[in-house]
Each structure stands twice: as C-alpha cells, then as structure tokens.
Image (cartoon, rainbow, N blue to C red; front, side, top):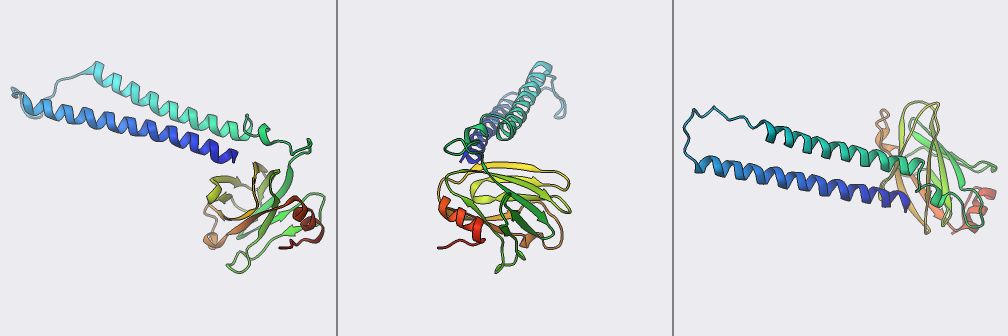
Length: 221
C-alpha cells in the first residue's frame, strides 16, 4: 500500500542515520577514553584542552543530520498529501473518481456515511458493537475525516495509516485496499474518558458486495 511504502522508506532511512550517529559517537568516545588513559597527565584532572574546530565540526554534522531527518519527514508527509503518492491511486480503473467515505469521530465512537447513498455505519464502540466501515477492495478509497467535538485520530495499526480528525476541518486520507479483508482501527489521540474503547473495523469487500452494501446497508458473506 502507498502509505505503508512511504512509511517503510522513511523509517529505514531514519534508522540507518540514527545507527550511524550512535556508532560514530560511541567509537569516538572509546578512542578518547583510550588516548586519555594512555598518555601521562601533566595537568589537573579537571583541566581540559579546547578543540574549537573539532567541537564546532561535530555540532555542524549532528545539526545537519537532524535537519536532514526533519526535511525527509516533511517531504514524506507532503508526498502523502499532495505529491506523487496520491495521484498514483487517484482514479479507479476506467477513470472513475475514488470512492468517498465520510467519517465523523465523536466522543466516543465513529460514524461513516456514503455520499449518494443512504448507507450509514455507527455503533457504541463496545467489544460487541463496533462500527464496521465497508469499502471496496482494489479501488482507491478517500476517507474524509472530521470530528464533532474534540481532536481524534483515525488509525489502522496493521496498515501503518493514521490521520487526525478535527472539529470544523476535513482531513482526507487516500488509500487502496488491494484485497478483501478486515482490519481493526483505533483512535490514537487521547480524547477523554472512553478513548481506549473507541475502536472500529474497516472491511474491504468485492465491488459487487460493496454495491449491495450501498443499497441495503448490509453485506452478504
């Protein structure tokens, strides 16, 4: 999936840089300790020579690495929202627009509606009554996320996908479910007393089952 691919790329790069910095700093520390013990001291233990060039150089390198990580993260977010990741899945086969699902978060559950259809999904967000948001498999789906009260976050952990749902604002999340299946979703933004029970499911079904759902508000097995 596009979002998972971008996440994996950024995480891999950040891990490599963090590992390189750790190894470099640890190595320099060990070398400094070894040299210090090897030479005879002719000054008080607390006295230290200044190495301005070395210290400034280290600060510049570490600052540059941190700035590069920030740039990579911001660039990845921009790609997800506006760049080459979204247009790659912006139209379904035949040139039709993405399937739009309007998701509204509230304390403490979710509601999903489908433009052009009377189908509606909600629940009590209890273990036996979780909303099941139905989407078509193999076609681009655009979630339009908002909130009735406080800030929530639409999160599908197994797919590494998360987007905030905020009052008086609509965030969009465009993704494609390549195959049929069901995934557990959660609210990842603390939103009050029953935040931890604010779970839901996203179920990807065949296009035929999805059309049936839009007409009958139910899906056959």
